Length: 219
Image 1 (tube, rainbow, N blue to C red):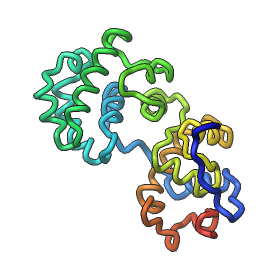
Image 2 (cartoon, rainbow, N blue to C red):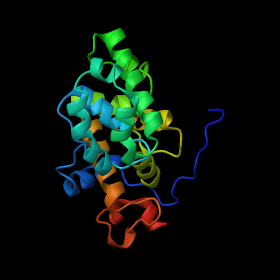
Image 3 (cartoon, helix red, strand yellow):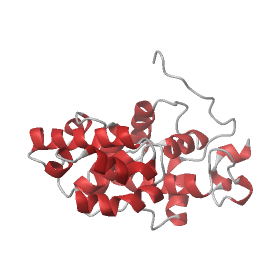
Image 4 (cartoon, rainbow, N blue to C red):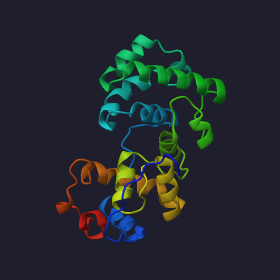
């Protein structure tokens, strides 16, 4: 694929994907979305806000935000200065305010204020890409999807499941390795492991319970 960068796959033979997935399931049986929400709209908003910040910080901001702007109509009609002040702790608060107001307006205009349970409709919304759409589909609607964030992409390469850094290609290749029923929980477990052990800067391979099945730790 022209223009798509790749990285070298681990030199050690990768363990079978189902073996690694089973080890992840044993390690993180309670893995879940770490953004707090009760409705599809709340999850959509929280996921949009999570760009370039942490879920922990988003969860500190969203309770007041959800109370102040409980519907798409309320988001669309929000006073920008008021919303900016609420989002200030997240960084990029002006851009995120514009995104939420635009998102609310699009939901109101095109979907009667409801979040669509459809990938194509979601990615057509302003500020919503495939990653955000798959988070919402999998966690709010129970629709199988693969969320390729930085953790999922990084671990998929370390496990030898892909050599690509293109999220769409990674999504497709993981979808070919695992059944749809496993996609959502697999991503949660990869994200849990990527945040807690297999970090970008200092993966703790010497203490990793998956070291015996991870080709990156055997190089």
